[in-house]
Length: 128
Ligand code: 5GP
Ligand code: ZN
Image 1 (cartoon, rainbow, N blue to C red):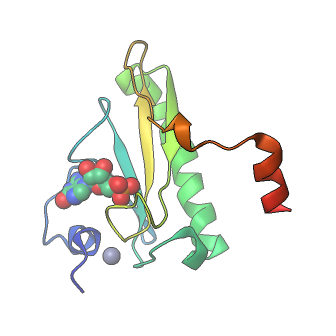
Image 2: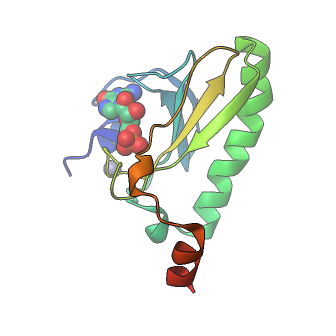
């Protein structure tokens, strides 16, 4: 299968792997937003959260919880932002959680188009 992350798992594409077990792999994002920006992925080729089984998902979050204090100590970061894109906005179609260490003045932000925003009541009604 022509999947970059599956190829990283196989070792056909090199990566800066900081953690690995039978289910998960954690490596540095090639295009980091902050120092130590990581990708946490399942070894199984799963595309979005909708395809993900509870057991694997829970394992990925256990790994994240285990790594956070270690990263905090080693990188001296002040917090973490977790992002997980599905479908639109998802460049790599292999499930991944961005685990991004946060630092004062890192200026990390997500931009959005305020012109597209409808009144809250209207949005609430359409979700009902
Ligand atoms: P997405 O936009 O799908 O949520 O994020 C995909 C992420 O994968 C991006 O942050 C991008 O920099 C990262 N990425 C893409 N190709 C590679 C690669 O070959 N190696 C590594 N380490 N990261 C990659
Ligand atoms: Zn894959």
